Image (cartoon, rainbow, N blue to C red):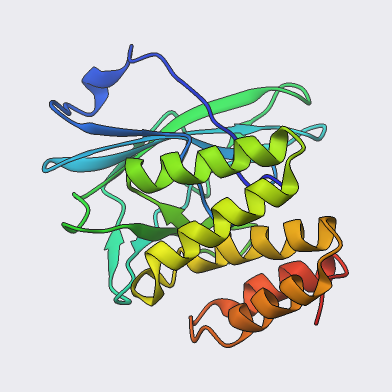
Length: 230
């Protein structure tokens, strides 16, 4: 049900980014991600740059991880902003070799400042093998807070209330933030199904199908792989 987790991290390493008077988004919400244990702990942004504080947990023996030099932020208008630098993670083809299953690697990715008014982005590693991605990543605290509140209801086993909250957010955000819609629609569909409301689930499934968002197929495939289709 829940597609994000909330993390906090001490500000011990702020000197790496040189960011002052920055806005911090803790545990930002997103629609889909590629790697199960890859997390964005926080995003720190101001007019000097945008810094992603990330973590990945190794799940296999002799696991390895690296960050390709071709990582970019994808904007709603289709434009891209390439990574400036990274810290704490090797650049492919070099890689970090995990010592044991369960070990975590924390690292930082630094990008140019976000465009003013940006509500959501995609974070994509453009490479040939095992690339990571976050789609529909929400970059504003107000919207993240509203979505967090809806997730809390779901976590409290109040699916009907959570569904109402997600629907309200979807209606508030409207078509102008279509990249946010899949996160909301997916949860509305799953919550409607959980409460036995197949009519509501089908309604929002068809909205997702006809939203016109260029990445809609990946979200429909995600639902289909869980046996949800209307």
